[in-house]
Length: 275
Image (spheres, helix red, strand yellow):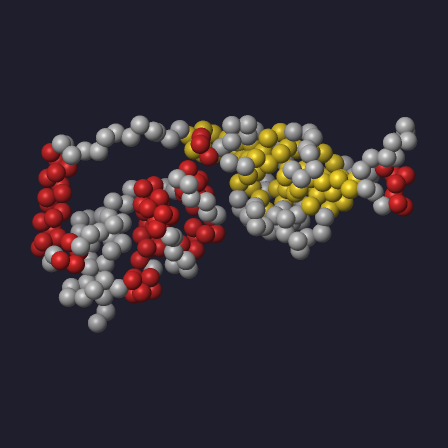
């Protein structure tokens, strides 16, 4: 017998299904992607992009990329218990946890339960204490062009758009943000992710930064190496001092390091910050 979805009130369909004379079935609910559809509806009703939801989840201690959120909404994966509770808090979903009344009461009983709940709310005597913390939003400049984590792509230093972010999600010393393009910095940085940059013209070996080489932007690990023997003359200055060669390294081992040659036009834009 096919399941019958019922919801109380006029809002979106509830996550929990009510099946008369039957036990709630988790396998059927997942097959129908009940949770994913509800999350998608609630997010869109609140005007949140996947990126904005990712930032808010980060503030609640949940680290996840946009690809993971997309899989939740499509039902390819499901959030764990703590991730689900964080989603319910952010999206204002009050019925994410339903007690035994959904099994022990019929439709009339459930309706009376809702009426009693509304009476308690209307009395004003059982309101929760006001939250002391209010999230502050700030506007940050985000480059309109992605910085490549694969093939080099030009980073236009003058082309930025202002986007609002929760202040707690932005490092205090960040000067601007830039979107990642490509997969060579996987699994640490992902395609489409916004990373925060502190302007600097020098870096230490091992630090991740944004660079411009011959007019193309790169997101890589900064490192130094001894020049090849046959190239040492190219790295010798007028005082006879041998300088090390700059290389830009990827986290993804499928990509070979990019060697910076003396003939290249190369500059350091800044250091990638973690939050």
